[in-house]
Length: 360
Image (cartoon, rainbow, N blue to C red):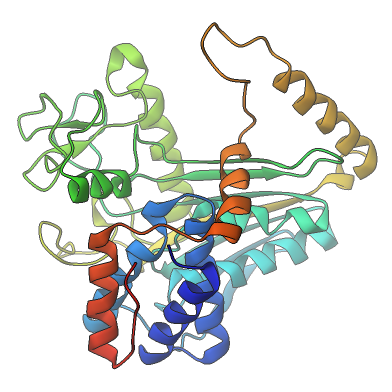
């Protein structure tokens, strides 16, 4: 086990070694470790080697000049200057929140960024302001649209955070694939097969091989196959790609740069935009109805769903965000577990930068 403060400080030191200013290194580390705290281990410190590889390939600008290139009272397009998504996205979300404060809602499309970690972090930034937050981002092509053998979409997550009163907030954060690629990486490290409906092989046939995507296969849209609604997952992923890429001026579809150019993934030779894109939004609750009134009804909504009768053998019905919130409370006290492969990769990074990382 490692304490979140220890991991956060280590990650911060790595980002500083990569050339990031101290304040931005601290911000990026906070967001990355927040994923581990909430049990989203696929998007936490296990991703740090990928950011280091991006820097070594000169695909990350450690000192970006993040700027608004177009705006209206309620919208903006932001150029991330090839910065870490972990730095670009929180700055962009602050713009969305400020626009919502002034205009009621704020919507920001971001281009020329990089992988931004856990989408839910940015949606939750709105909660402290009695706002509803939304965040989405596209990613490198690992996903085959329904009926396709070609990989054209990313895992393309969507996150929505809604404030409540006495109840904890509603926080939905999910990939538009049956599983995020990070979940495959965890299975690869453990030497386990995938559940049904996660991947297909190079011929387009169902597979249980956690390495299938590396061997020419693809992740599947949410639903797994047409009979179970994969066309709906395909539509969700496509919507994220259009908002994050086509609307912002970033790359889109098969041209979205992979998280780290290594192994089986390579950057497209021809690009159609600037870097990776995100789409963020904030809505002031009192732009629609009094905030306290809304939160009282959210409490009622949450309580009603919690009291739904569970099917035999199943636990209480959960509200999106419950599991992550409970894990965060536990891990702040007991520490964050890391797989031995992740520990080894962090020790290699420590050696590379002249730092020290303690094993489990």
